[in-house]
Length: 174
Image (tube, rainbow, N blue to C red):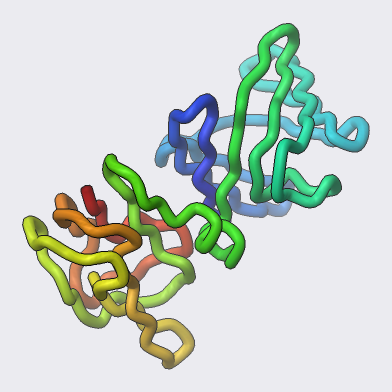
């Protein structure tokens, strides 16, 4: 499972993979060793490099109370407080509620695993909101991935015939 995690407006790409002994974690592509246990509703006990942290969350908007998944929340780790948001690219709520309209770069990520079958834009192209950037084929259906704002394509991160996972970076529009 891939997630985009924003903590105090800094973005991290988090990958979770279930294994026989629990989960393997990667943060921005780097392996991360954690032992995580839910001790109470809304509270996690995390062991990292021999140090124990208690993380308590308070939901600010959108996420169901029983879930640590998508939505904005306040996290308390010891005496420190953080504003955090977890975006699951597979969630329709995440894809629709966070479609940016303002200034700054926008990361266009794969909404599902599949294969890039066609590039519709190139780096340097000016695009309009809703204009197709590329086509991803998933389960024998072709899905046009569109720009979420007008701007210039500053990065195309995939090639035709590339396999992609949900949450993988496809393009950046500024």
